[in-house]
Amino acid sequence: MRRGRRAADRAGAAEGLFTGGRVLVAHASLTARRLGLQPPARSPDVMDVLELFAFVRPARFCAPSPTGLALGLGLAEPKSVEAQAERLHEAATLLLKELAAPAYPGREEAYALALTLERAGWAWGAAAVRALERGGVRQRQHRGAGLDVWSRLTEWEDEAPRGEAGSAPVDSESARIRLDKLLQASGLDETRPTQSDYAAEAAFAFSPRNEEGRPRVLLAEAGTGTGKTLGYLAPASLWAERNQGAAWVSTYTRALQRQIDRESGAVWPDPAERRKKAVIRKGRENYLCVLNLQDMVQAAQLGNGDLIGLALAGRWAIHSRDGDMTGGDFPGWLPSLFAVAPSQQAGPANLVDRRGECVHAACPHYRACFVEKTIRASRKADLVIANHALVLTQAAFDGARSARGQKQDGETAALKRSSSTRATTCSTPPTAPFPPASRARRRPSCAAGSAGRKGAAAAGAAWSSVSAT
Image (cartoon, rainbow, N blue to C red; front, side, top):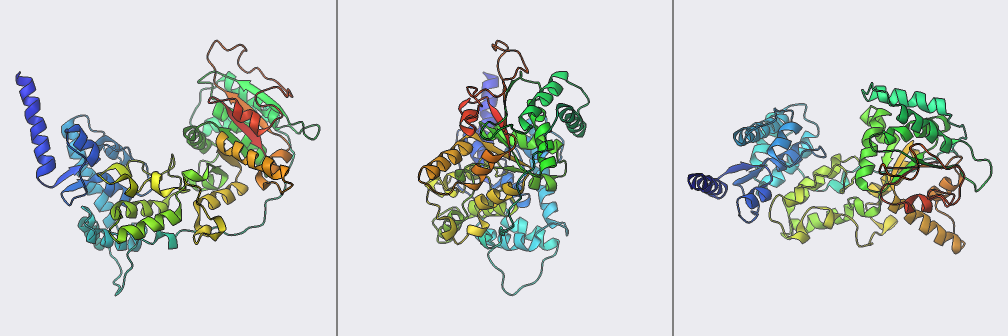
């Protein structure tokens, strides 16, 4: 009885704090639900530290909790509820100090936006403005609102097409040597013979084909924990390096795409170089539509929308690696921090093109379009990490073009002309009917057979395929 009464008293006290005055929280909506309350609307009294994080460190990862904030900012992990409350205070203080540092990048743009958000009633507006002023800002008679991010996004430029890829093969021993180097770069000293054998077998897919229309095919299987990703990245990256071409890796889920991207850090440890060498390709509905953002921002300025959330989403767009809102560097928790009508939330549901309304070259933001920039970046990359849905869609459209006698898509045609094609890998349970590292060569009936893209994608959720172009 006493314990229940004390718990009820604590819950009542927490509810009083949450609703009775200014309070620091991490994820206001989730906190309210845990207290049995409705998610709150934005208010100067509810200061969500996650919003401050999104403003100060846009496009940076942070788990939406006090512990996530602490770890994201390099603070000690809190072990108790009291320690979590202390870390929230420390996190807010640290973020404001970061804003006040003279070396904070993009200070003028951040200051213009902070002034706008302060006028819009953002809980952190005044504190952010003061912090930026302490670090020094230019005195200007007229200053923009900082909301027109579409006018400040980098644009793609036309470049000469990449030449045809070479046909230099990748032998098994070279694949083993490259794998050893990748493991050393990852800080992994433990040698796994099965992983080395896997990389050596995968090299077969990157040998020149003997005749047109009969690509090299490898069907390889290995258990969980073998290290398959680095196993096929070793020969794939080596082929791309030797032949000045792009190796395409196709997998089933968007989460696996990001996993492969992370593992490619062993090939290109420098983040700036990796952004050029490894490009993630997804469908159009995964990327921020700049025109949608502009429309929603302008509506919010007239009072019909979440101006603060859209401003923070726009700040993310400026700093994003590729504009990917579903699995990229967009903070998925941002639209749900406060009670906002679903049609006004600054999230993927409203900001990506899911209605097929893209006007392509007729769009005023065509040269700043994240989809177009990603397509062009993939043409110069060494590693293109795609998913089966995109690859199959491209193949289907290419087949329709061919049936009508129209010109084929450049990327699809390049894949068909490739000197080596696909190494398909899968994870299977121990009861698999064939042993690890088994392989089927030049068998049209294989799941990854000479049907090309279609065969690899049809294999299902566990499959990951590699193609060199």
